[in-house]
Amino acid sequence: MSNSSPTSPEEEEMLRESQQRRRSSAASAVGTSLSVPVKRTSFSVASMTSVTKMTTDFSKLFCLEKITSNLYGPSNPPMDWADITFLIPHEAIRREIAAMSKSITKLNDNGDSSSFEPWQAVYFCEWFVDHLLPAVLDHHHNEEVIYFPWVRTKVELPNKKLSDGHVELIAKLATIQTICETVIHKGGVDCTDELAELKDKMLELEKDMLDHLQEEETDIPPLLRANFTKEEEDPIIQKIGQSGGLGGIRLIFPCIVLAMKEWASPLFFDDFMATIPAPIRHLMDTYIVPDELNCVVPKRDAPFLSEKPALNRVKCCRVPFCCPCII
Image (tube, rainbow, N blue to C red; front, side, top):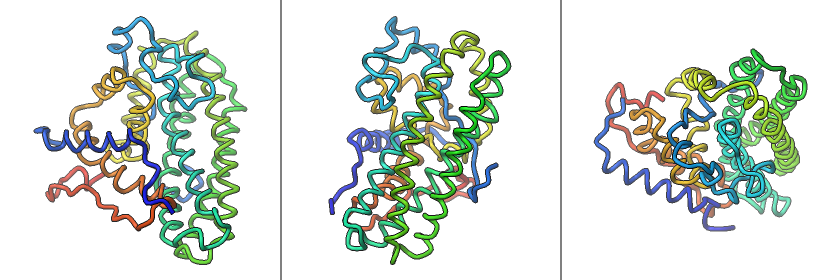
């Protein structure tokens, strides 16, 4: 087995930058049928007015060859806020789904228990149940309950296609959750049959998820562009963000930040981060992103690790109202 996880150079760079900011910072931090408690958070871009005024060529704000969407790229770059609204969360989700597929394939390399250690199977399944699953569910919830109803105030959506897509994906997620929980319960021992089934289900999920995300990126931005302005969208994005509270930011926001380090320009990334309130940025830099890289990513990539990782979270300040402990 490989001695290292498939963590990207951008993720490693992000960890180094977070640690550096932590040392230098003087700031102080102040629904579904599945058996997963879902915390609400924002998966869409905040107001990017300043960055869009800095350049007349919107495509220069992105590393187009790094975008994983089948719709956007060098030959068809994002045009404006309407495209970015969906691209930001979708880029994070696509990267997590791709990592999922690599890990489950690695666990099934030899078709028997000789291809993995029990802890590798357990950690990977825990990652799916505790991190990817609630993040994807939350993304769908925000769309169905907050964002899509707002769009319908002015224009008809292809309701059946989009809503049915969510229902079908949630059903597939529920099946995968059940298999993962079985592997966890068995401690990763004698679970080659479950892992083989998990591979089939996860690869099927990857295809369906990518198709669904592309449908949204294809169908909705033209409707937004023709019927709304960015200023009209901003309060809806704020509503999504406020619905999650502090606890919600641990779900997918670290993945959004890490993904954006790959596909967005430094100008776009810095402007996006500047829209986040300073106390939340402090939590992100000091605790949440380092914890993602030190504790969550190693579970996701466990099948590629030769030794069981320590999964050490950043130590808190040990006061009763410590924000990292609360969230």
